[in-house]
Image 1 (cartoon, rainbow, N blue to C red):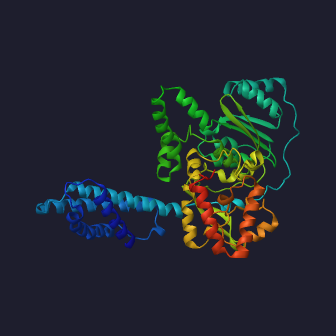
Image 2: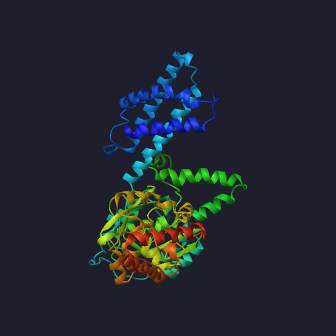
Image 3: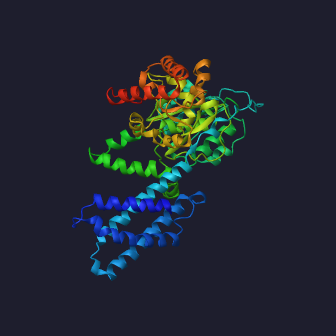
Length: 495
């Protein structure tokens, strides 16, 4: 209720000072009606449980309470305006006030629930490699010519010549332990005998599969250890290119935006997901390479090879780890990331999402494939979205880390909080020194602007040694000045 009072006060000043009114003294004129509106607002809020704790409520329930409460307050206040015409109150002003208040309350609720439902990465890091089991595979034999030709004909009809050429080159296509299917139905996979095939090739694009993770796990369970799943998908970039080419310039981008919201955004929101799946049955989703590969890693596979053919991206994934066998709610705007803090303790860092869903599973894949670029970030990181690149450039993705500052996990200036994987790349001496201090929002990186991992380590070592000799307070003041100069005058930016 105290928070709501602050929101009411904020809304009043926004409306009075930002919106055009006919009177020259809107503050004096509308102060009294504003004070009358406060008890009306609280009465409606109590009636519709707007002030009940959010901790045991869902986002949908909270949004419904806010909507009902503000709607009733608008109706009651409108009645007051009609019954007291002598005050010459403006319905336009009331509507503006209630509208702005509603937007601010909705944003506040979304912020709260974004932190509450922030994607927790910790549980994803403790999976074990699949143990080798006795294989039920039969002797792998070359199929007879008639059967081989029938399989090749099927692939040509369903996928194309380029696909057939690559599958013949990269898999044991015409052998008895390889199964070729064209299905989006999980039952067709679950009905197979365990360990009967060492390779399963699915010509159906992943975009057409409704329960993608469940389907991948079903394939995983049917394969032996190190068995291969070959699948395909139409990438977001290819989909966009083909879509824009079908319509005149200008109109094509408008239509693509609408289509993108329907096929990419709606499936991600919990309150629109069921509507989307009911209307489309989960078909023709827009998927990024990072999301598909991330899902495969989450489901116990590792990418061994990939190729482009007939407008699709094909992957060869090897069964290596235990899959996550529960739903991974992975679309929230805020992430909770495990980071190494003071005394080597792990704590949660909050950041806005700048990567495609399931990207957190792909860090080993990206590192092995692309290594590091200047500044210590990954080269050609397919996980980062276009909006994410902009947010990273201006540190907008790090705004939620202010909560870590308030909680005392971090300070303003200090070493960058690192993941376990990135922390393992540092020297043992630097690892030890890093655990003696709190990490910070502004790292010494922006004071020295190093380019390689070795230079980054040297920069942090210099900062930590100076903290030991001169104390953290004076060292942080010095680095805050150096960082500010680089950001303001030398345009230092994140990547």
